[in-house]
Length: 243
Image (cartoon, rainbow, N blue to C red; front, side):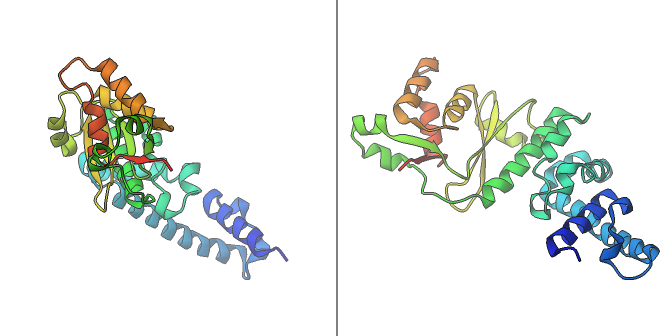
């Protein structure tokens, strides 16, 4: 008699791979009746996966249209990453899947941003670094302060101008190079950032210091506000002080 874990693995393999993977000893009844029941169950799972994708990517679905989006999702749910994901995480690899499709780059970026929004919403919480906190610090302490991106911060580099549903964000910067997803409190926000701010964010993917960020921003700065990118990251709650 197979263990519960083995039975579950075989059941999942049968749903994902088809009747050929079925261990007939797991079920009572004729093979035909067993397969009929599994087909009904598989259809239910497939429908649930499609609904989960629709709910995860409403803006992408709106930009593409219901029929093209649904067709793309039906192809995606047959991929190994989708089959091995639970419903809550089924869209995790959807953006990567779209990279190999013929849809416009702006739509691919949009899907990546929507999933980043969901990740940010469900991410762990930390008290963000604030402008008030840094303004109260001595200069030496501030420059040496170790920082990292807030656990809810996500970075989405753009490969095309923003899709229509997010075009309003472009007014925040002349040439947006990326979308920064932040959640300093309960609300997830999207911020269009330029190339200088993007470089600062990338530096914070690993532990860094305020001093290094200020030096980087000053080296790149050609305007009257060379440290603007650092202030932007702090002001939007994108950073945390490391303990």
